[in-house]
Figure 1: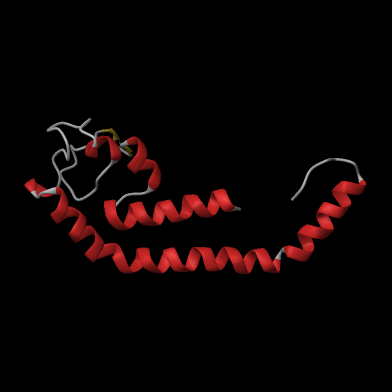
Figure 2: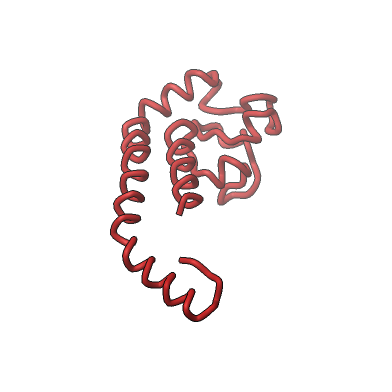
Length: 120
């Protein structure tokens, strides 16, 4: 569950700061295809930030605003949701882990008795 938790937390950060999900942030691929920096919006991707988009580093986002202004606006718009997710996701995983502790132990015991060598 830690990998899933990490992905959800990373997704919360990219949605809060860069106005996009983790997949689009890392790859630059949108529903319209690969076009980092061509959207002209406050959506930032990693290829756009490292200069792989048109216009060099930062690309063409939000009608010529600089990177700091776009990040500040994204955090103002999405920051509260991001903070809530950064708090709620780990708490949710801890609660689920405690609730599922006994069933997981029973399943592991059955798997061990069946000599499958697998854990849940």
